[in-house]
Structure formats: structure tokens, C-alpha cells
Length: 277
Image 1: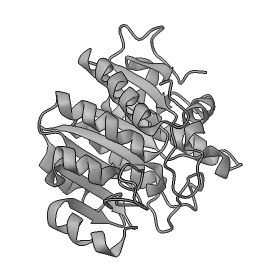
Image 2: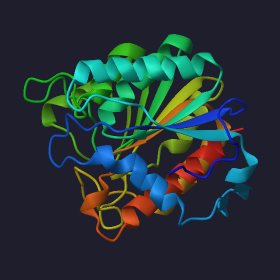
Image 3: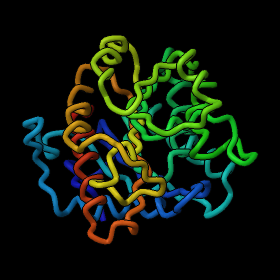
């Protein structure tokens, strides 16, 4: 089943939507590998028109190519497959919006973008800093993904919003070298102003939302932002040169109501409309 697509094939699409169904390093509650299809299924219940942006998905040139075929358990192989797959798409001049999956999938995708786009900056919306060097001895994990990312793009090029969970030992690192906004999105305008005229990659970990409105995630953290705050931020992305993005960490079966999947589908709609052309 496909998301709303405005084109019959990917040939003329400017933006490609792709699922990345991997959750092999989930540290608490796995299940995000089921998210891409859950988002697609939920998309049938929402309108293609956005009243927030006065724009319709039918008016942009995008195509959902389905999921990247991945191994069930071979992490390093999966990361290489993802990087190669995304690299081939962006070399064709297309923009990619990826549906996770856990947050580790962002690493190979960002690596592919950093190869093409010099001075790439990353905006991360997340409950967790993901800056620890290793989790129980594992350096490649959804808990370490932004540490590995910052090692590629430079810590000074990582901009974090909504952070409310980190280990004490890591507090000095982000405040010294990265741009971190704790608890909310109050520095969003400041970050956007700094990043104009630069290539920007946006990674939205849906657990940035408060679990009272988004419980379908593997590592829920109380004290998050509202859906409207998230949408307001996404609309502001029109001011930036967003070259790629992902939406990760929906674990649909932890919300039997299906509301979390519907919320994720609307987030994807708004993201596509804000950055697609």
C-alpha cells in the first residue's frame, strides 16, 4: 500500500518517500520496523490537503517507492545497504524523506548526504540527545546515533531541539560543542536564522512529542512538545534549504488506538509539503 502519490512512477518525482524498516538496536521496546507500513495505512484516513500550509500533496511531485529490503539482523550490512540505496537516489538530484525504523537509520542516510552536500547541518528533534559514545559497549545504536553523526559533520553543525533525556556525563559535550535546546523548541527561530543558505538535513524522532498524545514509541519520555508545536516548526522549514529528512521511532503496536500512526502520517504529510517542490 502506498502513501498518497501525485505521480504514477518515480521518474518525474522530485521527492522520494522510502521506508527503512529496521529496529535491531532498540534498547527498550522494539517494533519500529513496522512503522513505515503503519504510516502508509494511516495515510488513507487523512486528507491530502493541509490547512496548516494551504497546500495539497497532489500538487507536489513525489513518489513512495516502498521499503528498502533489509536483513533482519545484520546491522553493519543493513547500514551499508541504506547508505548505498540513499546515495543512488540523491545522485539523481532527488530529495529523500525516509520513514523509520529506529533512529540509527539516520546515520547512513546522513552519511550519504554529507558526501554530496558540503557544510551539511543536521537539525534533530528528539526527546533524547543520542550523544553517548556507546550503549553497553555498542557504538552503533539508536542511543548513539547523533554522536556518530556529529563525528561526521562536526559537532558544531548539529542542532538539537526538544531534548529532555541524557546521561549526566554527556552534558558537557553538547553544551560545549553542539547547539542544544532543552525541553522545547524555543530556539528554533534562532537555529533557522543561523542555517539559512546552508544545506540542512532534518531528523524527527517522534518521541519528541509528549507521550500523552503520542504513546506509540519505543522509549517514551514525559514532558514533550505538542503536535501543534511540531507542525509550526515543520512549516518554518520552508525558510531553509532542506536536502533530506527522516521521521523515526514510531512503534505502532504500543498504541492500539492507532492515533500515534495517524499522527505520524500527518507529520509526514506536513514535512513533504514544507520541503517538497
